Length: 195
Image (tube, rainbow, N blue to C red; front, side):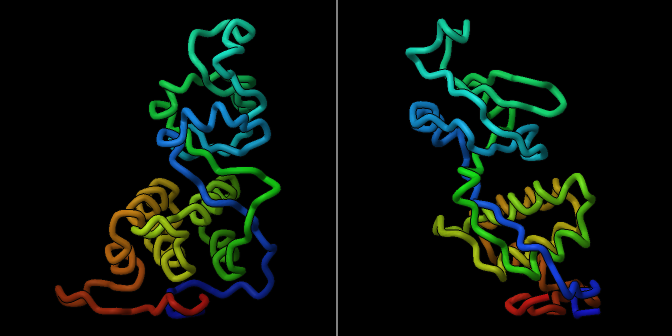
């Protein structure tokens, strides 16, 4: 057992994911760029799916729709067309091309396997690999570990801390590395090192 209270994992499959992006910011260019085959998260970042077609402006009649958007193949729903104006309501987040996925550090991938349920592991991996620091750069392994520890195995909490990383990573470091002891914040973990 390590200082975070979890048992270590000796061998870990290399979980590969690519950084997420807020599709609301990239909606217009994303639709026109043609994202067929791109992976996305739907249902407020809880369900990983794939884009099977893109409804660009010149193809609206073909789709029988009035607005550009994406066709997603969703396990629970089948084929679903989501227009650009609904991206925010659907909680749609672009993950990226599956062939461009980058791996998480082995210790982080292992910890995801330990603390998340089987159905939440892929989404947790995607969320962490897509984490950005306040400067918009990919979050380093320490920040990813802090968000992971702070999540306590909850996708909702992980999503919250990943979003918080982009605003103020210090809050996520406190949540991951510090505990309240007798009303004082005390550093109890150093997550700049592997689990």
